[in-house]
Length: 264
View (cartoon, rainbow, N blue to C red):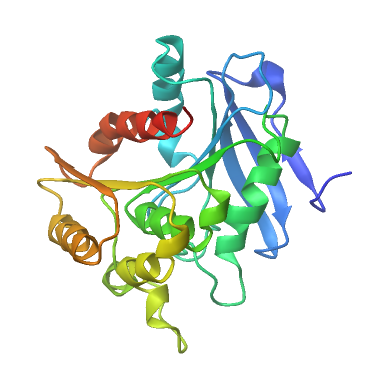
C-alpha cells in the first residue's frame, strides 16, 4: 500500500540514461510534487540515496538537464570511484520563485524533502530501503537547504555537501518575487550559521564550496570563518568559477566522492 494518495512514475521502456520521473500527491505540501530519480545499473538493493536540491527559479530537472548529474554519477560508478548509488532530485515544492526548503505559508517544504522524498523514491522502484544510507546536497538556495536540513535532521543523513550556498534567507529574499520572510520566525530559520551552531551535537560530516567569481563568495568565506571560531568541524573549499551550472557540474564530483568516503 502506498504512503501517498497518488503516485505516478514514468514507464521504464520510455526512460533514458537511467532517469525516472515521478509525481506524487504530497501531504506535506498539500498538492502534487515532482522528482527525478537516477537509477544506476546495479543488482544490489539498499543502495545509498543522495538527495540533490536545486536553486531558485528551477525544478526537479535542473540537476540532470542543466548539470548532467546522472551522467556524472554513472561515470564515477563505472570508473569505480564511487559505489552504486541512487540520486533523488526533487522539486523544492514549487512555491513562488523558490521555497527555501523550510516550512512557511502552511506548507511543510522541509518535511517534503526529509520525510517524503526517500519514501517516494523507494515506491517508484529505486533499489533503496529505509535502511539505505542517505545524504543531502544542494546548490545556491539548495545549498542553504542542504546545510539547514542536514543540520536540523542530522540523524537522517550520513553527510552534507553544499555548493555556492545562500547562507542567509534575507539575502535570497532580495531576488525573489514572493517574500519568504512573512510572519515572526526564529533567527535560526534564516541563518545557516545559527542552524549549524544550534544543531552542532548531531551535525553529520559537512563540506561546502564556492567559486572565486561567485557573488556569494564573501558570505561563504564568512560562514567558514565563523564555523572555525565556533569549533565546528567542516570542510570548506574554493575553486575557479562563478554562480553557474558549469561550476556545479564539475564539483558535483567532489560531493559524490565526499559521500563515498563516509560510506567506507
